[in-house]
Length: 334
Image 1: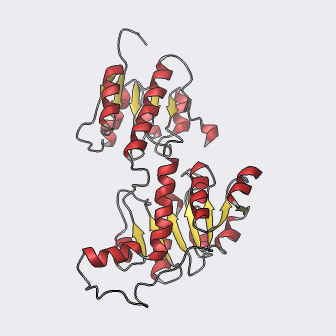
Image 2 (image 1 turned 90 degrees about the horizontal axis):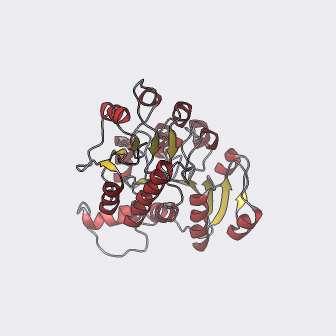
Image 3 (image 1 turned 60 degrees about the vertical axis):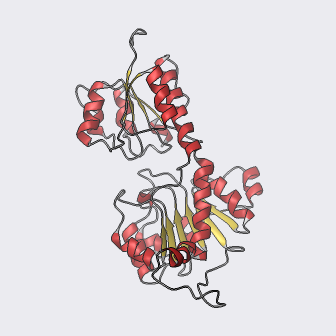
């Protein structure tokens, strides 16, 4: 690329002001000031005109976009940790580099996971709604009203013991939970000892014995419906499921049926299988106090979003300087 001409960088959604300002300084940046999601046609057009595309987790960069005969992209710098929205294999075959923004959202997501671990068994959202929605008169404290469940001493089963899973475990241990986990392989002994964590090679066996289950694995072809109908039926009737990872990891229809039937205690969900659509049955269960629903806000902190943007800029600049970007994603890593 000519050093005299700034590369065209198309950003699909509105980013923090400081990040957009820096992008305008460094690149020929085409911003999305109204933050309306780009249509598939607009994304395809961006791929034909831009040198660098900066999508978010809700933008699908599939094989048909990447393999357009006139696709001009040289870099897809994802504004997000996961890359399940990008066909990394197709991009790699086309010679397009893909990067992401790992590590900056670990603590934020773990905080929200812990909040849901607390909120669901203690019925926090249900209780708050009584005061704010005015549907039920609060007569004052009662020894037998709005009883939830204590979490201290309960078994927490973490699915995916990466950075976020470990951060969740540290928080949960401070609340007196017993830490169990399933992962592709055991964590290092020093980490397991620090967390007091018990490894389960068999996900089925772990699910059948946990009081609370936290989903913290990425969405990949291997983890699609990892919590399948068969596996969900292994979970104890009193157990809760918390998901701040990706909705596609859980068979959502089966989870709803099990909660409706009283065969699963409840759920705390920040992600959904068909986002941004939320199953109306989940909404009804939330109104009935069976589930707690959040609008995919696990990583939504100002600090986190700015750090994500800074990583995107570093990846773009490093790539344009003909060096290997620090957060390059390869098909073999997925």
